[in-house]
Amino acid sequence: MKILGRVVLILALLVIGAGAASAQIKKVRLSMPTFAITEVPFKIAQAKGFYREEGLDVEMILIRGALGVTALLGGSVDYTTASGSIIAAAVRGIGVKLALIIDAKPAFELVSEPQVRAYEALKGKPIGISSRGGSVDLLTRLMLERNGLNPDKDVLLLVIGTQQEMMIALKTGRIAAALMTPPRNLLLYRDGFHKLGSSGTYLATAPTGGIGVTDEKLRQDPAQVLGFVRGTLKGIRYYRQNRAESVNFLSKELGINEPSLAAQIFDWHAGQLAENGMADQAWMRGAIEFTKKSLGVTKDISTEQVFNFSFVERALR
Image: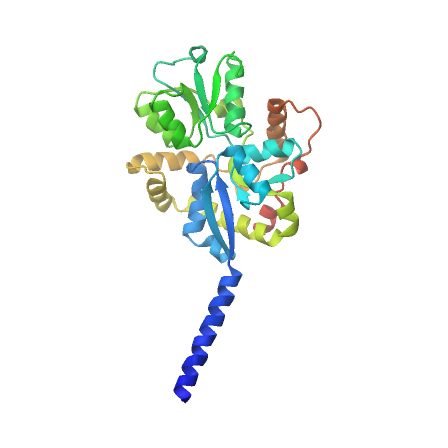
């Protein structure tokens, strides 16, 4: 009977311990407009258990650009990586902030079908975007305008969706051009598609990827936000410092069969990453002014209305 009693006691303690452990792990949802290279640090943070170390169980789901902000505001997700859509929403006066950035430079290149070799050849043709009002939409409009085309009259901007969906739309002839990021732009070039231009040539102050969060979440659950930011920073650091493993991770997650191509993409991306997940005042002002102009907003917008890097600063201490 004594042995049986001890067994029952041990089992009870195990159940209590398991319950306490599960209670400490908080389920959170992260929306991504696509799964591209800018999302890899989040995946690494998840795979390496960095979020678990912060008491978080992160579920990653695909939700197109601006729709990710809608899901965020509705409480369907806790965070989004749709950085351009977050900036646009904040400039419009919606209560959201960009709390961390992955890439400090826009990573997109405008890829066109093989027979389209110049911007003027796009006149009257459909061009793919991920969503209305997101970074892909705004950057596409900027590049077209700078090259003499009116995006509302000279071309047809079609909402296609993710990078993979836009790649398929290009290959099937549904669209004539779209902004693409590695590895898909490089794969398209191999198939004869043409590079019309790089978004970074037209705008150096626009993020690709990051952490968007509501003002309400920042107020009500700052501990969770800090944990999520800290776990992500661990993922970025690991990604940057472990080249061989990160190249293998890229190959697997992005479906790149050639190790040399994966290595090329990693080396390029390492130069795009924001320093410590933040940006300076000049960079933030540039991103705000570009978004204001794109949206037709004329009122003054402070950097504090759009960005909140205080959690990054705390995580780095």
